[in-house]
Amino acid sequence: MSIAITVPEMGESVVEATVGRWLVETGASVKAGQPLVELETDKVDLEVSAERDGVLSEILVEAGTDVQIGDVLGKLEAGQGGSAEEASEKKETKKADTAQAEKDNSAKTKKDGEESDSAQAEASDDEPEAKATPVARRMAEDAGMDLSQISGSGSGGRVTKEDVEKALASQKEAAPEKPSPSTPASQQSSPTPSAASPFTRPGAEREERVKLSRRRRTIAQRLVEAQHNAAMLTTFNEVDMSAVMDLRKRRRDSFEKEYGVRLGFMSFFTKAAIGGLRAFPQLNAEIDGDEMILKHYYDIGIAVGAEEGLVVPVVRDADRMSFAEIEQAIRELAQKSQDGTLALSDLQGGSFTITNGGVFGSMLSTPILNAPQVGILGLHKIEERPVVVNGEIVIRPMMYLALSYDHRIVDGREAVQFLVKIKELIEDPERMLLEM
Image 1 (cartoon, rainbow, N blue to C red):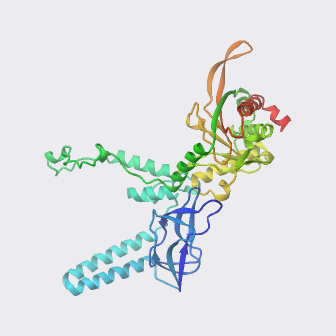
Image 2 (cartoon, one colour):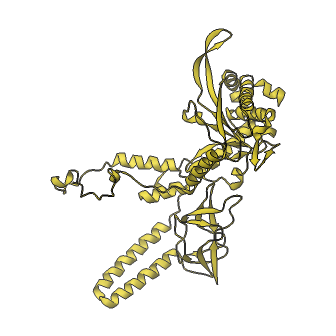
Image 3 (cartoon, rainbow, N blue to C red):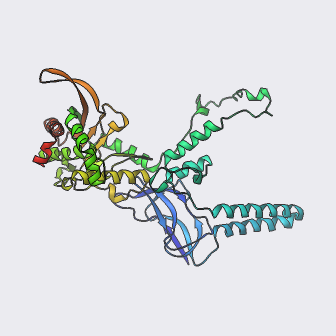
């Protein structure tokens, strides 16, 4: 009985995906629950598994193809079948038999070579497959690298994109390209370019076309939509980080010893943002037609730079969490994003977003709204600067804050006062304990 392998329901608002790669070959036997193919969505990557034991009889959609929910990816024949190696051997044997009918001597030589190749393939396939993120696996395959020879820095030794890039760089340094000794000197010089086509752009031979991943395409589409569909404006302020840095210095060791997580800046800004949202609820809302939906909960999105682009996992009900619980939640979500194990539920919803460009060295930026939200707080690099305090010029660790907001429901007055509220809470963190 033939069973269709279809694109499953992938969660709220996800209706399309891109076929990443097939994990089994045509003719291979599979067990119920065994992953068959990887799908890339705009939010997370997921695997489609076999519904029952059987044989993968046909692959209908190749890697790189965009698909929608319900599309048929391939077919599974219920029952037992040979392994992928056996299927390959049968194909090679059939080729050898056909060739033997035409020319006996050539066929014998060819068959011997095929059997040797088959044995090598079996030996290779017996080795355990290295754990790697989908992006890292594709990069290694394109470069012809063996994943098992690359040390993984991800969770559980998982090979990441950065690991593959480092391995490629080391490979290039260890084996620089040199002209072959047998190549005549006249051919070692730069080749004379052939007559250029009238449609060939100058320098095209030094360019590379790379297809955007589904996530990158979706990010691009949504960022443009955010700018087109909202009256977006950004206001700025600066905050003295002395009090928070002093508190972290005094409590860092005891905090980590008691809770098993470092005390970072994000928990302070998450708490401060919640204080600002309580004071100015228009920033914790969204527009639906001619109505404003005010949200009486605080699901704070934390923007994280992952391998294939920015993702915004959500810390649920952050107002009910302690500093330690917020830090633990952020650390877990960041680790998931690096390992490629974020679930759709980790990314759905969110009422307000915080993005920290300071970790990459950004001094100032204008963050783009994470639609349908109407506010996003941008943090930046802490720099020691001269400031005037009580009539005296002193050196203080200062950070620029940026708030982008939808001017359709948030006025400049509320936006400026929101940043002032955050400034007050960060510069006097004890107020968070008294007011929140």
